[in-house]
Image 1 (tube, helix red, strand yellow):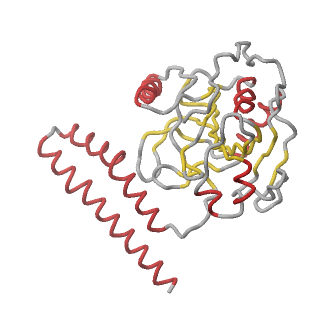
Image 2 (cartoon, one colour):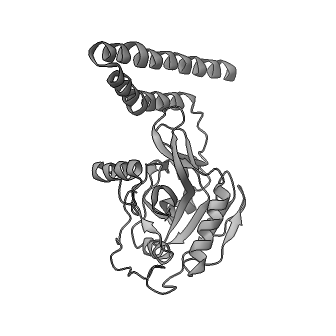
Image 3 (cartoon, helix red, strand yellow):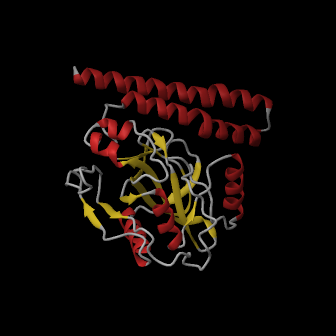
Length: 296
């Protein structure tokens, strides 16, 4: 029965792939080629395929192949594996924001038409954009609650960055070992003590997304090194307390919380309350920071 189900799933995905190719090459490109110059026909076909047709086909294919496994990493909007979870910080949002501000990191602007256009211009012209928005990755059945970044040089194409998803500790205590922990959770209030589950990676240039071929950042494969860099940054000015590392399935002491699941080592630390000089590493004040998490 299991093999029959798997065969049926793969057959559906094969049919979906053939239909997708037909839509792109036969339907869309054929129509565009008859009405537009070759260059415009190719450009419009690429835009439609990369940003409209392929993402939906990939999402549908991932849904067909979904076997109900608990995700151990973030997901892209297409339903593909995204950045690995490698960090958990414990505290209120104000403490999280303060820790990164002290280390000289900037909170990412919410993703929207205006910020996307500014990012595209900065990307192409290689101009600085310290608060550039992040693309949306998904965990706990929602996009990230907040993100922080530190540019590498003046280029928007290279940066250290981390996305966070907040989870009320009370919810984690009740459902941590179940699929509900990952698939249905609410955001914590700004003043509420919470788990801030993070995925830290380093952007190193330009690339194309797998399968859909959208233009995006190229990411350094060594996420362990990026986790170590981020922990060092936050520790230097006392933004976090002692760090402990956990393997999948190990007990994680968070009061009643007894387990955190990941596909690799996870650095866990408590956020320090009011530690350090109340100014950024570069000397600027913290008074202009937002008081609530935003969609990065």
